[in-house]
Image (cartoon, rainbow, N blue to C red):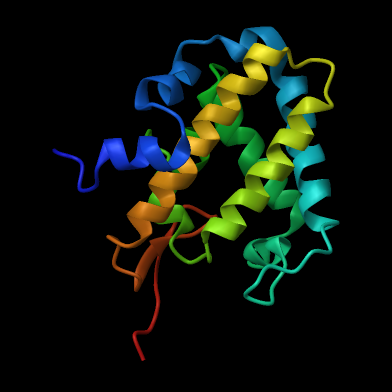
Length: 178
């Protein structure tokens, strides 16, 4: 199946090549930072997000994107995702029943604008940079993946049917078109 959007455009907008974004799959980051380091990253990240008092131009806070779940659940979901993505146990797939993360579908209901993505990336870099378990190469590898995926999510949202998405529970949710 071919990609419905342009990889060169995603690369240009993110400043990251597709190959650089895929280094996350072979970097053995889980072996370097461990499950504890990944869990600490997600806890720190969501502390930053939930304590962020800067309104986006849409009038909402970044934390409002997570209003359909609790902070604890958001942390747990991200921990499972990154533990698996960085080479650890398949916790995310075990919970969702899917081997693919479906990042685009999972983000359809959320207002992933350029501003929101940049704020999310700012908090992720801040969270990663302050953890002793994380070496600079691992931080940059994860950030390049996140930067690239932010662009993929924004481009992919335009192609998705907004009346069907996959929520945090992994269940397909249909919304009214009215």
